[in-house]
View 1 (tube, rainbow, N blue to C red):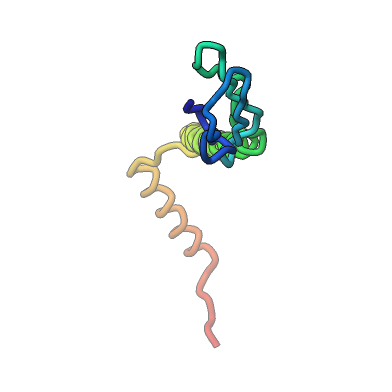
View 2: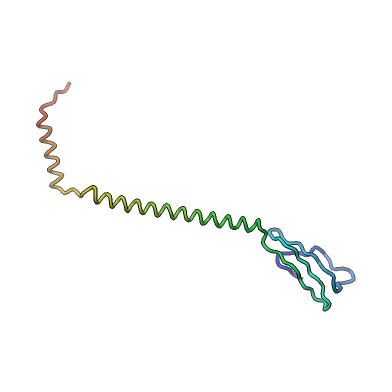
Length: 126
């Protein structure tokens, strides 16, 4: 009989046919572990005992791959959150610490600087 993820060890049925109590061992396909045996019953049908399941090494690789993907996604998410918080904080700091300059203030500062130059007197150039 067909067994998921397994193939029979015996290539051909016995010459005298299958008799009650005779069994066929199966080998699990690569990537699967387990023990499977098909036994011939009194009614001529087979009953399958055991099964092949995903090998632990395959499960470990799959789990590691999934964790790497989750870890990468979390890292990207953290960077985006920190960047957003930094931008928000910077804008907030800029509003509090650096008031908006209006034209009259800028003009007054420039005029004051010109007066300061006039007070220091002429400068000599060599």
